[in-house]
Length: 240
Ligand code: CTP
Ligand code: MG
Image: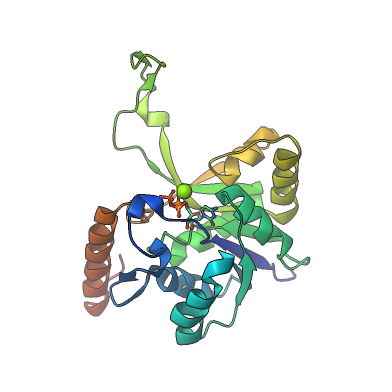
């Protein structure tokens, strides 16, 4: 079988408003290097990833070059200008994907603790199902409420999954999903939603609770301690 060509789009063009820092959260230091460098490292190292489309704000091209790209010498990275929403940033990324790509995954720049095994499983499952998202079983009880703040109903937790990234698709399917959403003015909070709209089934790949999205200041403390624990286990020769 001919080898698959897989691209990853990494949207990193947000404002990081909830982090309340003076710079975009992707450039904050986590365990000695920028958050974004942690994220890129994993995909650069993964042999199943052929190219990385990194989506960045125009005003941040310089900081990205100087603080991340130049220092860590990535070979797979192509830099693309982002848009006003995550969806628009991913769409800009899609336009830069190599036309020979079979599979495209999206992964938030702000999720630095992604394990290679999850990336690999996502690609294998996508070969079977064309659309997969990484998620973990919901730990909390989730309630659906109405506009007045009263509970409408409580879904069975056994069927609730908290969705993360990567989200992985057949290239053609993701492109069609984004183009259709754009045409109809639909804004979704993740890529899978746009694929679900087309009526295509999306399979869950079970991930890890450690794959957090760095969103608010306390997430940095949590991420720092997860990385420390991982490093300790590595030194003891253990797998996480
Ligand atoms: N993102 C992007 N382009 C946008 C908005 C978001 O590429 N216009 C990226 C972010 O940089 C981040 C990922 O999408 O890596 C997930 O978004 P989120 O965690 O919400 O990041 P921000 O939008 O930057 O943060 P906030 O919502 O707190 O402003
Ligand atoms: Mg946001």
